[in-house]
Length: 270
Image 1 (cartoon, rainbow, N blue to C red):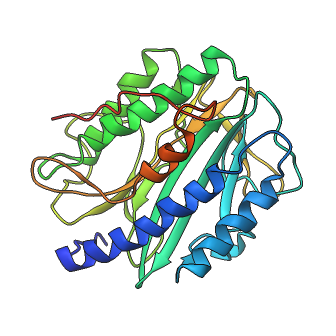
Image 2: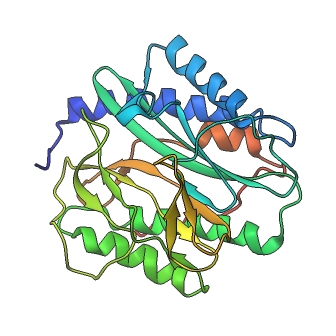
């Protein structure tokens, strides 16, 4: 079932999203070689709870943490652990917050220290593809228009789009209908209507599109062990232009003019 949220409900999701954005920024402040991914998870969980929220991921289908932390060739769903970040890593932080009965969901991938220019471009272009996908989240379009925008932009650089993992609706439940693939054809899929809330989240691989799941039942890696990038916003479908509910503003205030910055034009279709 697809839900269509009122303006009052969307305002509540935006409050949740502000806490989420600030939690991301608290984590971003600490990303550096030598810190463990578990330390980052503790910071996020503490901040979310101290600000009246509930970490959406903690305990979800028995997931053991508040953050999905995915390093290098891990696409998504990596566990926080005693792994210490190293110079040259990339790290995806995926987080959700439930507040006032509504979830928000977003992700950001950071370069750690001296990351190769080719991998930095992967991050920038994946982030740019997110904004191109968001630009299609308007009333009257279809889900396939979002995936088509993401796929055609990223594949022209030789990257590949993960097929097994997709975006989704979000609201009173963390995952709702419809599924939102990062690939597709124009004019296909469910029709977009005002009030739909979507988590759009390109997962783009440097190499092949194939992925494998680890024995833990969660961690997803690229089949060729090449890097993968992941960026995500929660948005409301509107007439004429999508309304972005989550924010990277707090992240980018922390990372501006540092090696963590992912520089893009933040493309958005008019």
